[in-house]
Length: 210
Ligand SMILES: Cc1cc2nc3c(=O)[nH]c(=O)nc-3n(C[C@H](O)[C@H](O)[C@H](O)COP(=O)(O)O)c2cc1C
Image 1: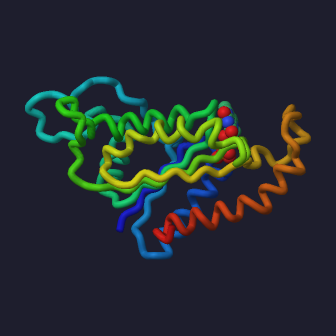
Image 2 (image 1 turned 90 degrees about the vertical axis):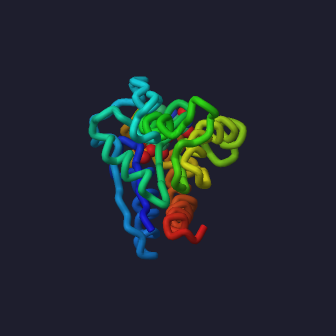
């Protein structure tokens, strides 16, 4: 069992990363071979629309022909059984860097002949999204939109599941920042009550127990 974990947050030790590291522990606990990638460490762009993946007569479909530091990661994603991705929500969507990854992994799989997938394998995709909004606002604000955002991953032929992590602690000490719309007390309470449950869930998802 191969699991590849992709961190779409620029912060390597904060909410998204902590969730993903727990998923990593879960996957390792059941003997999966796990690779963890920080997307922000790589120099790459989104789809360049070179359309090399759509040329007639190419040796291989479902391959991104653009070469940069993401290229080997894309190959390893397609060789995995499970892809676990994580991103903070920035302006109602995952980060721009994460979007670039999505374009590069999915577009080569999409057939412009009949909109089926060129991909012959199956990769299950689990998505962790961390955000400021509380659970009570998630469905109304983001539910349908984010479901649609992650639809393209269906071209990897597996399941696509979204696990939101709400109301995260954005900074350690709110008193040092102009962040008057947040209550530090509330954020810290969520951190001590709900966040450990989100970590536990991430472990279980990584272990394939949820
Ligand atoms: C540029 C930027 C935009 C953000 N936009 C949103 C947003 O639209 N909705 C939201 O709920 N949180 C938003 N946030 C908060 C982050 O999603 C939240 O703090 C997240 O847990 C950070 O993840 P990290 O700790 O892995 O960096 C934003 C944060 C930043 C830096």
